[in-house]
Length: 168
Image (tube, rainbow, N blue to C red; front, top):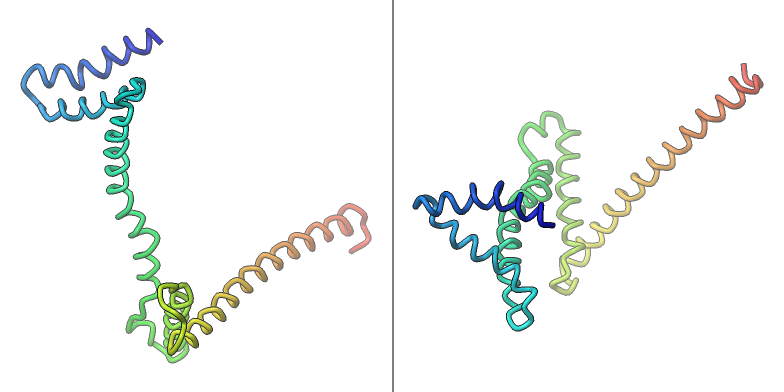
C-alpha cells in the first residue's frame, strides 16, 4: 500500500494537481480536489454523509454524458428506421409495407401506454399492438426453431452419410 500511495503521489497528484495549482494555472482543480477528498469522509462516522456529494457529482457527470448517447442509440435511431419517406413509395407494395410497419409501431407503443385507461380509441389500437407483438415474437421463435432444425439436419447428414455410410 505504501508503494501505491507513493506512486500515486509522485505520478498523479504532483504533476496533475499540485504543480498546476502552485504555478497559478488551473485553479479550478482545487474545487475538484476538495470534492475528491470528500470520499475519505466515509471513514469518519460523524461526517460520513459527506461522501454522498462526490458520488452525486460522478453520477451526475456520467449520466449527463451517457443519457444523450443512449437516447440517440436506442430511441432516435430506431425512430429514423421506421419513419416513412417518399422513397418507400417507389412501388405500391413497399409503400403498403411502410405504412403497415408505421401503424404497427404506433399500435405497439400504444399497448405499452399505461398512463391512461384503455377505452375509446386506445382499446382497439392496443389490441392491434398485441397482434403485432405476437407476430414479432412468433417470427422470432420460428426462426430460432428453424435454425435448430437446420443444425440437426446437418448433424444427421454427417452421422448417417459420412460416418455410417447409410446415405449415398
